[in-house]
Length: 378
Ligand SMILES: Cc1cc2nc3c(=O)[nH]c(=O)nc-3n(C[C@H](O)[C@H](O)[C@H](O)COP(=O)(O)OP(=O)(O)OC[C@H]3O[C@@H](n4cnc5c(N)ncnc54)[C@H](O)[C@@H]3O)c2cc1C
Image (cartoon, rainbow, N blue to C red; front, side, top):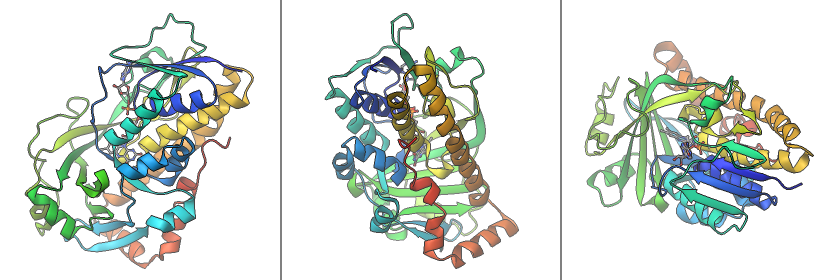
């Protein structure tokens, strides 16, 4: 069976879904509101549950050429920069979970997806445009992000609600004076997660190591949606008793601010006349670094459900049956990480002790359900 599908949004969810559907033989129209794709957004950690699916689309060589495969995720105490624990990645991750763990700029990932979509004769992309509800598509997909306008048309859909936290992001290019200090004090080949009460900062290389992506997350006010451009200085760092982190970040400028919103995955996702995927359906706070990975999983799972079903309603029911428990478990992990990473006092002491004493195999085993998952196996 081949259906005509239209998709609102050429972000990570929209493009991945279009590619999986086109490979399955469907005709896909994508309407993107922006006039062109700008390299906006932060760096992304792409875990093996996502790279396995992108590999199936034949995109792994392009991804590897644009990204870095970090050797480890290092957890450190943000107040003195001392290491707490390390989760081995690199070849170990690729062997254990069957696909690599990569870090990449969101703009680079979106460009790779877009280039692949433009090569696909079954996909038609229109920029500067929105979907036309009167067209005779068999399935209309809302992949229009956390601020989705399609969501408003779906009765019972969860709204986006402010998490109380704000992300501050900066990209430090190799030629910048702060680059050498960051690379020397935090490993330039690893993902570093610096934890303090009510605060964490993640640093990792992107653009083949030619830039370091910094994302700091702390309590803050909602403010305007999207990145606020041109914000020069980050809010004061909470709990920075030693000043080590303040010194490390003192030369970094050009911070942009992103209020973090989440969409409960338990809300209605719609039907064939309008069905939400990606952040539009289930935006999650970035504590588990899984928002884009879930958008990619959605595309693979939706295509698999449509291929395996004789009508669209039963395909969507099948998709929901596998995606809802998965998404609620991943959102639960993000909530847990927020609690543990931002802990203070005795909880933080217990966390640090547990992290120091846990052997690497047991730390890795804790991620098997997340990174070992194959979203297209229904
Ligand atoms: C600070 C931060 C760090 C993150 N880190 C990670 C990470 O390490 N790993 C990870 O997996 N995820 C991470 N994420 C999450 C990830 O960025 C998102 O989950 C992902 O981009 C969602 O993809 P999407 O396609 O659903 O939405 P988007 O990427 O937002 O795309 C939506 C698209 O729809 C378009 N659009 C909007 N409205 C319309 C309309 N009406 N009609 C047509 N087009 C429209 C937009 O222009 C846009 O192109 C992070 C998020 C933040 C904020």
